[in-house]
Figure (cartoon, helix red, strand yellow):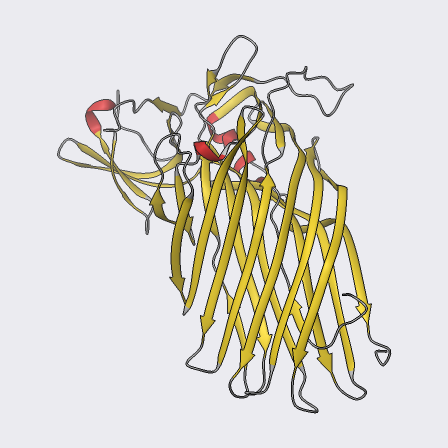
Amino acid sequence: MFDKIKKVILFAIIISFAISCSDDKATNTDDDNTTISPTYNVEYNDNTLILKDENDDLILNLDTATNTYTFDGSQFSKDPIAGEVILVEGKLLRKVKSVSRNGGNLVVETEDAALTDAIQNGEIAWDVTPEWNNATSLKFDGVTVMTLPTEFTEKIEHVISYGGIDHKIEIEPKLVDGKVSSCDFTFTMAKKIAGDATAAFTAKGSVTLPSQSTLIKIKEGKLDKFKSFNKGITADLELSLSAAGSKSGQHSFELPGIALSIPIRFIPTPSGPIPLPIPVSIDIGIQFVTQMTIPDVASSATASAKCSITADGDFEYTGTSIKTEGKFGKDEIKDGKFDAAANIGIPIDVQFGVAFPRVGLNIAGQELAYIHTGFTTGSSLSWGPVCKSGYVKMVVEGGYELKVLGQTIAEKKKVFAESKREAKGENCK
């Protein structure tokens, strides 16, 4: 228990929040800043070329190194020119840098486009709940490693090896109240560095994605208003770690993110769904970070903790700056257990972090905002005098970058709320 810590382990875990959505309908008014009425009503700029790709035969190739697309030229009414914007409905929004012909094909070098490059005036708003069964792919470090079947309902199981670490991912969608916005999950990591250290990390439990309402208003080619309200992420999880040393050394593992991508192709409205031409997706991410000092063969550490949380997080831009807010609905920390062993005078420190679900709102391939709840737990052993301590901490954290909305305002990381429980031995200062 917290008051009976014997040794070490610092065990850091981050659980990601979600930028997501609900089916309740409301009206966009300045009197009620949290209600949004779904709509897609825009006036495109004259330099915006709008195409459909219903048969998946428009985009023939993509060179990711140069962001150069090869298109079927017969589907263009005219050749694009530098500075124009190509919108392939539901798939692509890019600004043209250069164009050349290769037979009947168009070879177009592109760069990122902002919504304000394509839209002169308009309002885009949605109120939806992302569901696991609508995910289309699993990505690792930005690269698709698994394409998921349409409307999948089976458990996702995948093993990814990176830098000598094996990551096993299991996500099993659950139908609750007619929606598949909940899941059971188990993530395990195993690491052995040339016999120097062995570690096993596990996070398991269940999460429910939050509702999300988003509003974007553009006037005269400039962003006028942006709101994104994220309500009710729920997570119940158990974290565990074990690590053992073989010889003196410190090891730090920087692990790339893993994400399930859920596109939003239609906006639900009271009169039925309407297409969303701008490519929008919600990426539900898993991220791991760990660092450990296990100095010698006699060193070892274990830790476990249980956490339960609900949380909200909001973003709001109104002309000159952005306001952010996040809070806990419930935050419970229980069953913290820590143990470590080492020779006299040898300190131990082990840290582990996982973000799930880290939910990012992406427009035209650019992350606009993200929010997550974070969980950390750990213990440490130090000497002079002997000090044994442990803690569990939970945070609500988010970040944003408004480049895709035509603004330079950005804040990559902001802690909205934090809760911590700590235990220290009698000799700790």
